[in-house]
Each structure stands twice: as structure tokens, then as C-alpha cells.
Image (cartoon, rainbow, N blue to C red; front, side, top):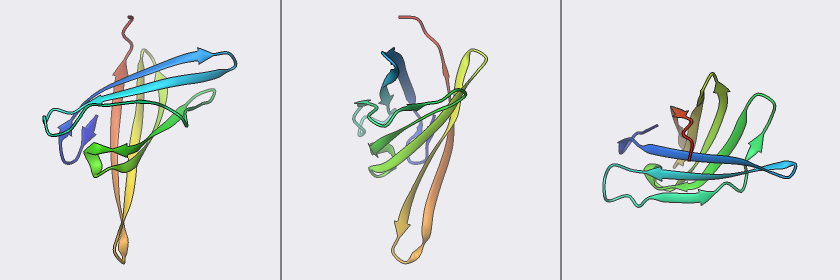
Length: 107
């Protein structure tokens, strides 16, 4: 995954069924040591028939803005987009878009 200020990052996404719902956990490791590792349970995870969505409410990689993730299983990979936006003091909002791919790893 690409973060504009820090470059590619390592992302780990854990999804697991929990009764009739899904639970998820996200870990993001940034290459610069000035950014702390992010590790959070996904309180807004939504899983549909062909796609899923969740957010990082306060991402260190983009000035603590909320980042929304959407993705789908394509073959053996999870692929998706990440999006955030911020108001710019009277100017149109700045929108930052990125994409990501994850490969399944068995524990």
C-alpha cells in the first residue's frame, strides 16, 4: 500500500467469521521509524457478497485523517482502494487515493 508522505507500507488484514458477522483487525507498519505501528480492531467492518469495507479512523501516514478502504477477493488476492480527504481552509477538499493488494498467508 502507498502512503504519499511515507511511501509503500506493510499492511496486515485479519478477517474472521464470528457467528453471523465478521470481525477484523488491521496492522500497518511504516518504513520511517518516526511513525508508530498502527494496530486496531475494525469497528466499522462491512462484508458483502463480493466486497468489503472498513476504515482507519486516524491514520498516522496521512496526518491522522480517516482512511476508507474498500476491497474484493480476486483470485487468491485481496485487492482494493484506499481514500481520504481533508478540508483545505476554503479551497476544495484535498482527496488522496491509493490502491493495495494482500496475499493470503496461513498462520
